[in-house]
Image: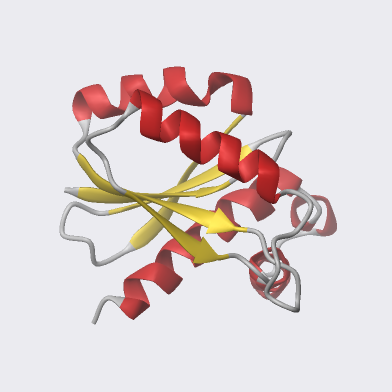
Length: 136
């Protein structure tokens, strides 16, 4: 079964998944928050997901950031809609900066490097890889 990670934002949610053996994390998509439940219901018709990983927004002093309330609402929606799938929170500090640096190092042109959707998807991949690294 796969593990799915979310980099939640009020404009879009970056999504990443593992392969069925949970070895590799890859970017899946970017979805508007209004469409996420429909997207997940469709995805879960064909793929088994063992666990959801959600980025937890924190400030440098480890307190919740301003966007934490939105993430909490998203997590509650996931719990309500998919009660059988456990949810874990992962500190998401620096994931966007790491994603931007990864994109810059990839050699993409400037227009692609500024693509916020790509940054969000890669942030979700980094969240998922971070979670995977703590399992062993």
